Amino acid sequence: MPSDFFGSDEAAVESLPEPPAPEGMGLFGEPTPPPPAAAPPPAPVIAAPANTPYRVLARKYRPQTFADLIGQEAMVRTLRNAFAQDRVAHAFMLTGVRGVGKTTTARIVARALNCIGADGTGGPTVEPCGVCAECRDILADRHPDVIELDAASNNGVENVREIREQVRFRPSRARFKIYILDEVHMLSGPAFNALLKTLEEPPPAVKFLFATTELRKVPATILSRCQTFHLKRVPQTSLATHFTRIAGLEGASLEPEALAMIARAADGSVRDGLSLLDQAIALAGPGQAVATETVRDMLGLAGRDLVFDLMEALVAGDVATALTVLGAAHERGADPAVVLADLADLTHTLTRMVAVPALRDDASLPEAERTRGAALAAQLDIPSLTRLWQMLLKGLGEFADAVDRRATAEMVVIRLAYAAALPPPGEVLRRLDPNGAASGRGAPAPSGGGGGPPPLRAMQGGGGAALAVAVPLDVPAMAAPRAFRDVVALASGRAPLLHAMLVQSVHLVGFAEGRIELRPRPEAPRDFASQLAAMLLETTGRRWTITLSNDAGEATLAEQSAALASDRHEAARAHPLVQAILAVFPTATIGPVRDERLDAYGLIAEETPEPDFPDFAPPDASGAWDGEFPDED
Image (cartoon, rainbow, N blue to C red; front, side, top):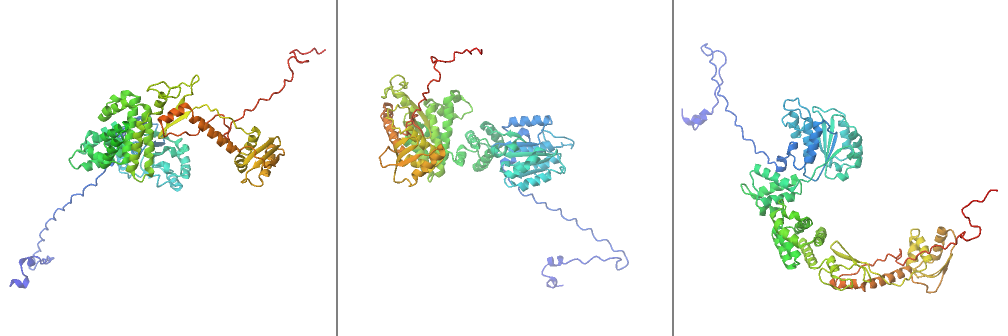
């Protein structure tokens, strides 16, 4: 047949369906042969599994046993002993900064309590096997009897009521039903109260494990029902060792200084440090070592050399060099606030070196601290470092409201350099001789004895220094009559407006017991006299006569106080020691001058004379008792 009748090619013929196989007997009575065996289906092609999602280092290397915890030896030792003696408490409170292992420890305790061993016959153990069904399900966070809740989002009293209802039932399969509450300090007050009774007398198969970063926010009634473990910040040396091991497992290498930077930036937190290590390895690229510059740029640090350059410029009082170094740090991407924080950290290190000279040879310190730091410590003393520390803290506080962070840092640096060029107050006092004149360096401080002026007391604080001068004042006393001030004091606290008028708007003309003559100022109310009389009647129980006069009278108490304050200020300014200090510090100002003799109104307090009572029976008086009783007869 022509090919175009059935199709254009043989493929079309091959594609036609085969006729169905005949059933029963064949055409000539022979049995129908069985159909040929079908070819076995091809083996299914199993696709390669998708790549496992990347797990960050903090999750990948989370401790699984107590032996894996670093930096918490005291807590691990206590828990090991508790398991060994079967004295595991029903409630634990784990507290510490972020990332030190609070929740991780709670999960390890949950596995240790519920582990049944590889053969299924084990009991609570400090070394959970990790292969039994209980351990595997707890590790996978799918165990029905280990309930982990975030108290920040489950902080209501209704959530605690649900827990109270659940604890009444026995565990579904595990040995203990365990509740892990993270950030427990976020529970509300009613929620804490609802938890108290259950926490005090829980069912025997229930354990509570609490974790918090704010222990002070947890009520004392809750803490008294828990065993509290304080997880410490992990030391930098332990962090560096831990990070080196993990980097080796990841096939990465780090320069020693880069590793030290990450350990310092972690600030005692293992999780924070692993997150930084993860980021640094990613920045370096595959197969490349993590360089110091990479970590410095990642953290926004100024570089230790730049920090030392800046400190040396500040100590020398070289403003130009200090600003140049600060500008170089800014060009390298360093945050101005971080630069000042690094300066504060270096100041702390230098202070420790000055206070304990043996630390200069401490092998755990970086090379820069042991060389350049030791040289700087030899030039400085505790007072200057304390002033530097206080000014840095004050400067760091200014960044909260700063519009231009770089300008703020420059202003702080200029202040630091300027202050370094000035002698400390103690040095000024040593340069002053007892007569108030400037003397050579190292002159003895004035003793204040004899006829010379009294010594000065230097007090450092805040961003500068304050000088408290004990200056004898020869100011004439302008005291009003004592009795009138007693009347004014009676109004204090009872009639505040009346008290203010008596201090500010009243001139005393005359005073006698039961009678007061006053000249009120125009701002005094019309019923001023009646108010005063009513107050005196209420407080003394007797009527007083208040007379208003047109006589000038004395100055008001406020005017007298202001005049005395001005006289004290001028007397202090004229003192030789103060004159010598102002010569060294031309921009210094004299603050309020205290006088211990002043009363609450700033006036010279009058001494109350002792009452001069006559003797009731002078020894030489007739009939004085001689110590013997007369005869009764």
